[in-house]
Length: 108
Ligand SMILES: [Zn+2]
Image (cartoon, rainbow, N blue to C red; front, side, top):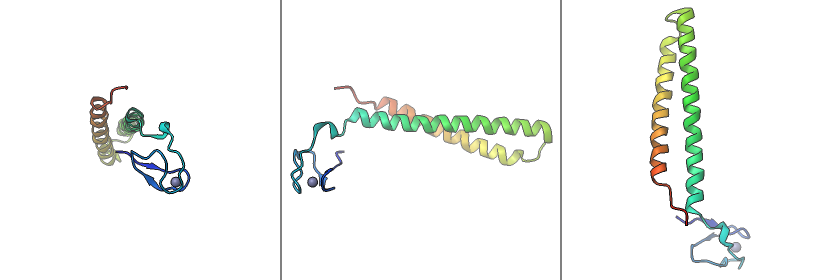
């Protein structure tokens, strides 16, 4: 999908436009959507979210284990629930990372 906004007037441009129909500003080629660049930014963002969810999961799991050792049952049910949610989130994000890896566009 091509979405490009004119720098001069903010008008939405179509893929075939070389000049803005509104203000005649030239559409520079490097501003065009590069599928690989789009993919890379998506991939980095989702991978970053995944890493955060994994770190949060292990932090919560560590706190849960620590509290269990010190206090017994107290707080543990809530923390186990949070850990489970974070683990589910981590698994979900990991599947998105793997799906994106398969969809990586070829370098032209
Ligand atoms: Zn314009």
